[in-house]
Amino acid sequence: MKIKRVISVVLCVLLVSSAMVISAEAKKAKKYVKSVSVSKKATLTIPASKSSVSKSFKVTVKVSGKASKKFTAKSADSAVASVKVSGSKINVTAKKAGKAVITVTAKGKSKKGKAVKAKMTVTVKKAAAPAPKPVDPTPVNPDPVDPTPVDPTPADPTQPATAEPTQPATAEPTQPAPAVRDITLTTTLKEISRKGSSGKNEQGEETVVDIPLYQASSVFNYAPANVEELKKVHRADEILPNEVDAAIEAGDKANGRFEVVALYFAALKAFDPKNPDVAYEMMEELCESPTTKILGIDSFNAFSRSAMKDNLSKSYKYKYVGNAYFDGAEPSNGYTPSEPPTVTLEDYVYASQTSNQYQTQVYKIVTRFKGADTERIIQVYQDSIDGKWYIFSDSWKSFTADMKDPALKYQAQWASEG
Image (cartoon, rainbow, N blue to C red; front, top):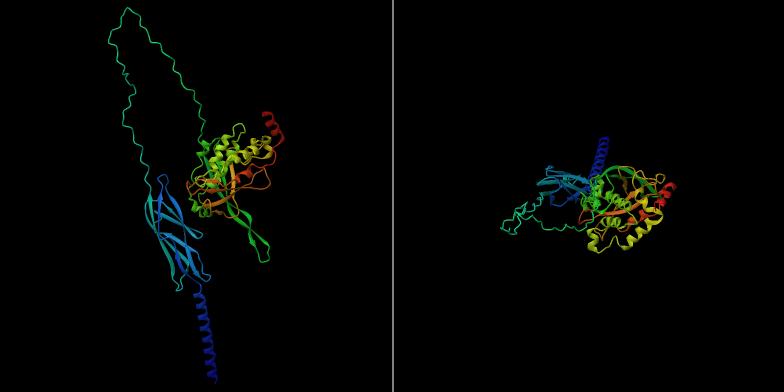
């Protein structure tokens, strides 16, 4: 009898254990990776003027249950093309001509416990350098012979030689071209954090967290004083418009978003009501992109010029507004910036927004300066046609608003100068 009871207990234990194992396996089976997908083929062409080029590709990981959607990526030939994971994308950097296979592997397993992978073949090409301009084969005679026939009659030695009267050469008066200096603009980044909202908790209270972002220091050797100098440093960015989010997240070179704002401050600094066209030309360069021209948007128009002139001309404001946004400037020193001219800016705590009209992302850039107790924000975007960064819409106007008055002695000095 006792033996039967023991056997019954053992059988019950075995049945319960089996049920638990089956249940655990069932739960495990509900949590797995279904598939990983990425572009099967991609071709990247390195411009002749660059040593590399990057492009981002979307990776889609489909899962069952709460399986991880994270993944890793590896290049079979990093000398041809290297790869980095950035959120839900991979960022491929082409380095030299050739082919490289990129393997993307999900961190979770399949239903059968196997690795789930996807492969992409990247073909890298190097653009040919532009052909040199043909040289004119016509020989140049440094001392051309006058084809006028010479009178063979010998001169009479008894007569004094006479020279033909000559008219003094007259040249058309020319206006001297404005001096164009070699301008350099160097930007370095550092990671900081600012407080921002992450939404509301279950109690309906706003949750404030530290949000990591980048702060930039942009240094000029000279602040551009006209549009020709400005164009020297208003160049296409190294990052393509569809790669900027990933580049910013990785701290990569998307510095044009900060540099276009620093160039805007240089345009404010160059404004003079006696000759406002200099600053207007600089603003047109910074506001009117190929996209705005295609869309027929007059980004910096007659109303923009009028608003700029009205705001900056009153009370000698133009004397210090541009300087106020450079490092070292404050009301007590008449907004005199330190040397070399440096601008400190940072990303906004919240994400970029999509502009369907411009077909690109719009980013907010923040300046914190001594002329106000709160930060000021400007919006910028990278044009998808020429790769340069531009000021979005009329967001520049807030930077011409009133600020703290400079010290009285500087106001008196500017009033005496007229």
